[in-house]
Image 1 (cartoon, rainbow, N blue to C red):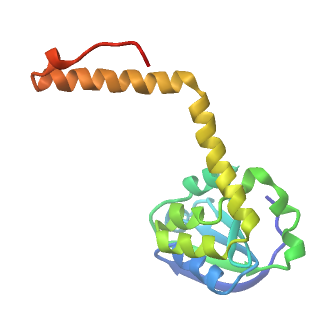
Image 2 (image 1 turned 30 degrees about the vertical axis):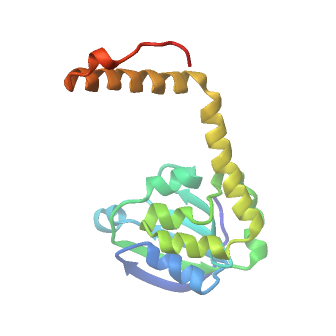
Image 3 (image 1 turned 90 degrees about the vertical axis):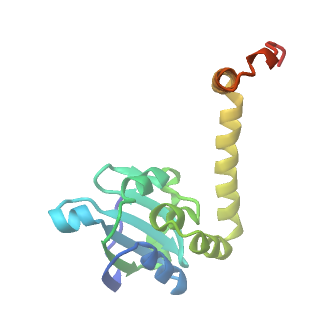
Length: 185
């Protein structure tokens, strides 16, 4: 992901990346954060995570080491702190092209949940997010659930696992004669 160099507005080492996410939200930052996790800080590594913002709301995430984007990138660089965090301000026009990259997008509250484990920050971020971003996130979550429900083999595997576990528990508790085996689903 290529971004123009923005104007540095804050540079700190923080224990928790939620600090940077909250500052971006509070300042309605349009720009990006470069997060350097502890393994890079302490072991001179190359891993960097980048999260872009539009009016303080996260839009994209990218991990430089794994070359992955979106929620996968967040998982890649979600490690215990400390983090070096640099926040940069950019003109919204400089982010128009990168923000039009669906494979790098993240739902608005996900960085707060994944990186900071902060449900209050996630809720505040969702509250600030534009309606179309919230509907995109809901569509993404809904489509994942729909895709799962359409996969009959996964559902059958879960059912079989539940049956096996029920039989094992019934045997363990001496109730196996109470079970009725049916294949009518």
